[in-house]
Each structure stands twice: as C-alpha cells, then as structure tokens.
Amino acid sequence: MNDDKRELPADISVPFLITRTDYRQFCCDTAHLSGLPYKRVCRVLGLLLLATGTAGAVLLSHSAVNYLVWGFCLFAGLFFTFYDSVTEPFAMSRAAARDFDRMQSRLGAQTVTVSAHGVSVRSAAGCGEYPYAMLWRAVRTDTMFLFYLGSREARMLPLRALSPAQQADVAARLRQALGDRYFESTTHAPQK
Image (cartoon, rainbow, N blue to C red; front, side, top):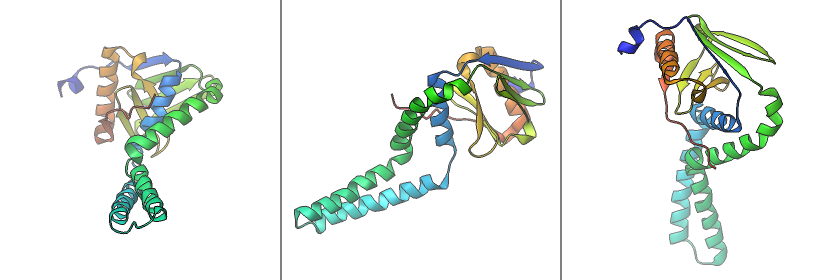
C-alpha cells in the first residue's frame, strides 16, 4: 500500500475515557478473537448433539419421556453449535455491562501513545510500555485497535478517540512495525 510508505508522525498520543460501550465491545472482541480451541470443540459437540437429537426424536421417540430426552439433546446441540456466534457474545455483553460498574473506578482516563518504538498506555493506576517485539499481535476491529500482549491479554484504543487521519496513521504504523502480526477484523457485536 502507498499509505505505508508516507512519513508518519513521531508519536500518536490519544487521551480517552473508557465508556460502558467501549468495555462491552472490548470484552466481546477479545473473546471472539481469542480463537481458543474450546470454541471448535463446542461447535463439534453441538453438531453431534443436533444430529443425535434429531435422529433420536424422529426414530426412537415412543413416549413423552423419550421426546424430552431427545428434545434436550436438540436444545443442547443448538446451544453449543451457536455458542461462538450467539451465546458467547450475549453472555459476554451481559457480564461486561454488569462488571463495568465495579471496574469503572479502575478504568479511569488513559492515554495511549503509538510511537516508532512501541505502544505505551498511561493512566492514574500506572503505565505500561510495550515495544513492538513484545506485542503478540494487533487487531483493528470496527470500533477499536486491540494490542495483544498474549493470547488473552490485550489493551484497547477506541477508534472514537481518533480522527480519521490518526486512525490511518496508527494502522500504517502497526502495519510497518508488526507486519503479519497486524490484521483487521470485523467486530463481534455485543447484544443489546
């Protein structure tokens, strides 16, 4: 891309306050992007339960108790099959909304700086300096940049805090510094 060859500002420093919506989206995005193996196991288990429940309901149900047992298999199959796309976002969104009030005192104003050397996050609670070599990956979703320190630990920078020019600069800087460890993904939208 031509954008990556242009001169970037030395530092892109952005102050912001984490909102309830930011926190909910952060929880949903990090859970969705974690790619944990249990999600694949849930999908396979769900499909197996769906097939078993359907076959049992059609072929082996001769009484109300049998219908209940096979119906339970069908329900569990649906739950596990759609865990990643429906169940988990709904549960994560609800948990994040519930936890935000408790966490709000620790989620004060932050300033994220993206520089030629790495990403730094400063708040009243402390500061963290993360050189690019230390970042596992960085992801741009529809609503934020996520800076992963490992497979499950991440820091965020909401896009709402950046101008369109700053968004392009941050994306270009991350593309230059991280190469294939930077990618863009669609947001895993929280349920209202």
